Image (cartoon, rainbow, N blue to C red; front, top):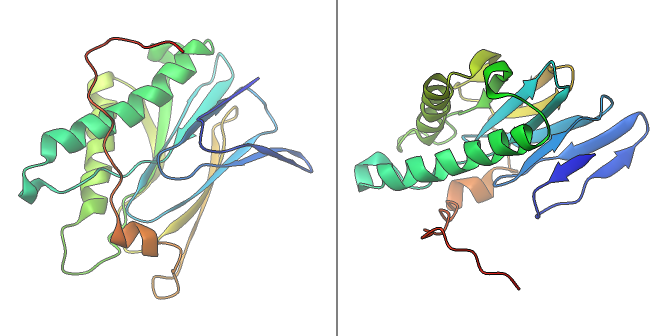
Length: 192
């Protein structure tokens, strides 16, 4: 069984399920043949799994704004929301918080002379794992290159390829925009 955020649809390929996770999404599966992929610039992807339950997943997030504009608490809420969606999806599939392990990728500095959003994303992800006592078992953060990441969520295997900085046009949207933070909620639910 697979669980997908509402933005995308998984696709089957020869050799198993292959799912591309884009900014703002997360994906969880217990399919041992599944591979999750993403492209990262200053965004961060958390690849988490519970090796005993045999379930894992990936998210892809970018904190909005920057600390100099006084939006740090808003950015933190957005990051916590993205990470908790992944953790909660894993827990709902039988994972246990104390067995979770994570690999973090991304957080590159793609634009010289501006706030290092990639570093802020990477530092947030590391702080989140430490605060939640989720083991950080690897990955690759920071630097000046985008990354192509593949993650096999059941086995925990991960592979990355660095992309040449000068040839990256795929990150133009990331350079121009910032995601909208989650809507504040009073805890009520409206059913249709």
